Length: 176
Image (cartoon, rainbow, N blue to C red; front, side, top):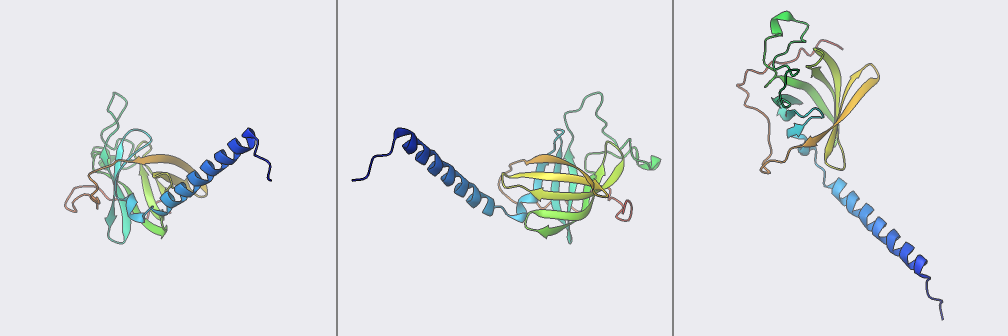
């Protein structure tokens, strides 16, 4: 006759079983992640919105909503080093260009235009298991990263804005 488990042993066994089940469920959810999940609108860490789309062989992203405007929020590209471009609107501006898919859920090799500094950085994107995206801007091997959240839509894939828009394209050759 086997001795009965003490109540603390039984509780520990139940907690371990629940933890294992949760871990396995999280693994299944992570495996459901698709590279196509990157397409569509994402809420930025500052409250704005960037929409990612297929732009030929690459992934691109345009500013599709500005964070709630206040007196300190510019609506034009006032920090651009090219004075001729400082009056262009931020809404519709291409913020990401030339991103290539490295592996499922990871992109790099492209450019990120930081509108708050008027500078370009090497860009990296990574879809996370929890459905968020880590966006990184890098100079050499120094990177600054932010977590963005997908904005749910009607479920239809969003392949980006119409190609006849007036969005500016970032110069691919700069900041190599």
